[in-house]
Image (cartoon, rainbow, N blue to C red; front, side, top):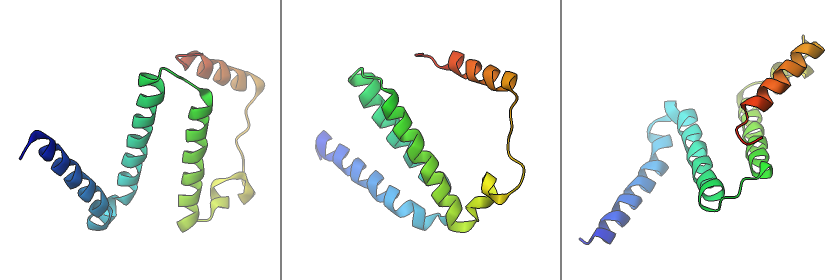
Amino acid sequence: MSALGNKTAIRIAILALAIVAPFALPAFQVELTFLWIMIVFALSWDIMGGQAGYNSFGNIAFFGIGVYAAAILQIGLFHDVAAYTAAAGGETLTLTPPQYFIGLFAGLAAMPNF
């Protein structure tokens, strides 16, 4: 087999394992899902931030909103989503103004490209 044939065979084997893994290892479905989300994130960041040299807050916000929505949907499949939010009627997180601004400025300072 040529080098190109070996690379193609390896890629097909990895793809087959990726498709079979959630069914063969049901206890690790969440971890495998998280792994694939991180792989897609790394590939997209490599293309957008590395090769294209284009950093955009819109791409990051879009990914963040998508992950948040996916997490809410996954919680909703097995649990009451209201139990995880203020809709349950329980106590909610309240911050004093100094706590809010300290957190805001600490977060802004931690951002590398701000």
